[in-house]
Length: 491
Image 1: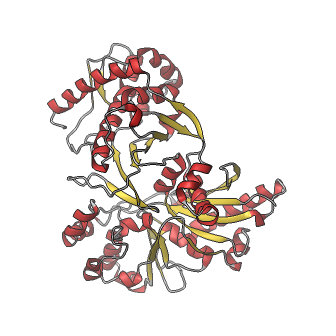
Image 2: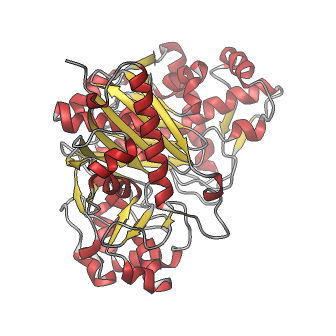
Image 3: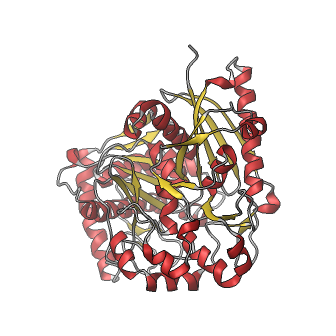
């Protein structure tokens, strides 16, 4: 019998990525399709895209994927299931036939600021219970904006759904289903697993919101029309996906409470595994929910790798990286913040970056900033561990870090982070959102359990373990780093 393949589709801001993955995690084929660049440029104080363009890109990517498989002699009938992820907070308003009544309001559309404030006022008890506050990026705030500013579009909408939901609707014909992680920013009560009454009292829309299921739940089958357009086999199961960030977290390999997926990109983004929902007294985190009563408390720091292009433009970063390895641990204490203000692991709108003492050489500054990010990361784990009740006193019992993002490609930085945080840090082989969606497809159609699917499908490319001698030096430097942060009023 030919091996089963699981398709993961990632619908992003700029295009679509599709992977065909075996039950053991082998990426058998991959494809992509870009969106028209003219669709990507937001205008002043708005960011919209036409959902039909997403579907066209999905069709193109799936047909290309099918052609790649055919070139290997693999029939489309090997496709055992498919799942889709999309951007978090993007809102699609559709009519009774699933046709968009207006362009989608993207996750980063900022127009619903006033509506978010009004929702927070109306949902104080809910926000305290779930541990987060609504912002303009949340889909529910966008629904309120439509009601206030485009009542005709609001009234025409038979359903308010998310980016991934729209693609699932085009595949299955059912536009009325979503998943835990996409529904979070529309105000779904993840504890009670229902749409809360206050949404209806405030907006009167709960009858137009989708049914919500756990990620990895079978939700339909590919229709004949969708099969004709995509080249996917008619009748293949479609499984509920997740947001792109949640899918990427699953692709990293996190398995047990205390484990973290940390993405070192422009910013430093965290998602951990916990057996309980977590909340921060200042609302700095929110928790996604996964099957098996597991939660993903997450947050993002304004630090990350943004300092590299800002401070070292047109430099040979690989050469700096290699040279910095001999200068770590660094006696210079750096807080590598490029922009003003911090949001996690502490809230300090007036925070500024610093490096003391000022290093004399460029490579010394580079090394100090690598170390500084690791110290912010260590501080974040301390906060998240305390909230998730996974705090431990010994490095051997601490959860592991599964690191993704561009900064994770540096072995020097990975070892520095392992030493400075006293945690084992792994670099997964395929940390893509589309791979996470393929895991969800396999969980729903093959394994029957998400955590078994992760165990079987995620492979680690490299592992970095703390060096005890360096870890002791970092302990002393970290204590001094915290003193400097306290002196500035950041902690």
